[in-house]
Image (cartoon, rainbow, N blue to C red; front, top):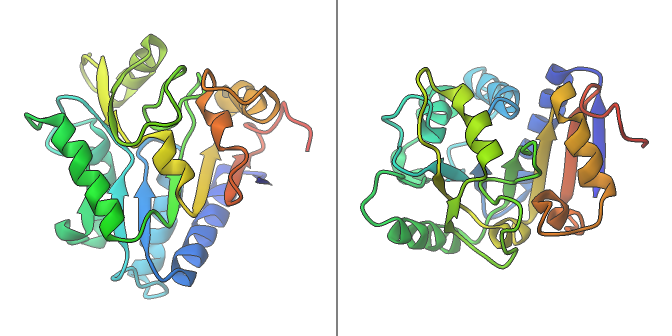
Length: 242
């Protein structure tokens, strides 16, 4: 496990973006697991900027979505796919065939899980997984208590996550379930990039680094991964001693 602390969110995002690019370019298989949320947005902005200026070519990259709310897809404002389309896929004009993303509106969510697993296998496994961290330590929609042995699965969403998730929507939405890659998928990734920013993440960052490894704090299950790197801004890092 490595930890990088930047003075600002922008500096954190720039460093994480460059490291993602370096890792992807060095790999024969180029499958990027991409998470939605406020924290990774700066990283995506950096990658988009580099592509648009001609400094980076991602034409051979493939993408798999981390998670999605049940009952939603990219047509739903506030969904995970909606945000990533706006921040990343649409600006880069990524061909849909290069993206595997859970469709939470599908009639058969188990089939969505199987399709995602097939896509990951087809492309040689996840090269880099980009993750945020929830206030309760969840990763993707792997909430406290979730088995670390699970791959893609339908998840029951913790009440705290349901409440926090409302910030992405203009009107209240039911967020009782989701569909997500499992901890097992993430542990099998070659590299894991975890980002946390802001004072509201300081307490959970401290727990993630210092508390006992347990499925009750899912983020801790990643600590022993040899390719695990954490990126923090000064506010998120203020409670930990490095």
